[in-house]
Image (cartoon, rainbow, N blue to C red; front, side, top):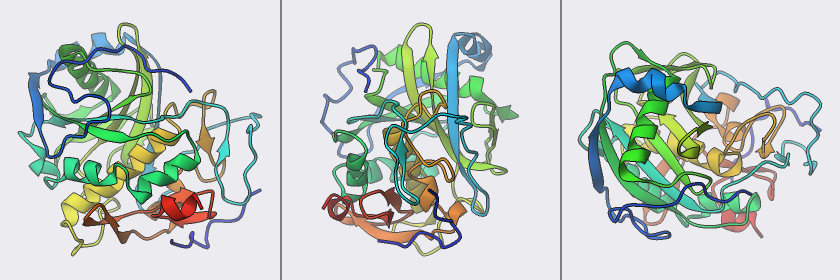
Length: 328
């Protein structure tokens, strides 16, 4: 357990969308043991504008750089259905994930090496761990497994925008007939040197945020949950050097865990459809992020040690790595 930064003042479920997967996708509950490339796709950037016109209800929430604060939702007069104490998360009635598959989209890299080479290893370690068990305080439980990697070739010159991320995700989902809805999340990994800004999240990589998660509705494939995962080994996003899996791999894993946990507990991150949220400090990962003065630490998931940020537990009213203890 880690104590929440003293600088934080004390303050007063939907079904999956379209189904159908190809035979190359593991069955529900079946984890990919190692990084497996499920397919490669050339995605045309000129299609981004047309795909963006298919999108509605686009919302996103970013993980700020260390030293900055999260951009909070404007909830107005909305009252939570359950009122939490102190720094705890309150429930506002929106949907949550109750298990699902995590799909990785690797942009312009043949494998996971561009991000430290251990994305799937981390997802397998996180699945069923005490850390992800903290999410069980906020939903009905369930398992979260890796659905494998899909590599994409894409023109990343200039600055990528929301439309580019929407285009990449849409192309992968439709080409491979992958599921949408609240049982799947798509993580779009961008390599070192790629710049990206998001109107949905309200900022730019390296200036305001390290990464973000979001959701939107496509007119043809329905509701999609995703995260945008730029290169994390930069100032304000990276973990300290000398970390167990290497600075790049652990930095990638720490931010990925942040976005994964936030998607589970607040997938739509919309003021009119928010789930678990703290009106002063944000989502489950925000309360325990370096941006709020909480240090990363080494924890063991499965048989591997990782340097990660903790997540907020209402059960212990503090940042924690241990959902087993948090549930007791």
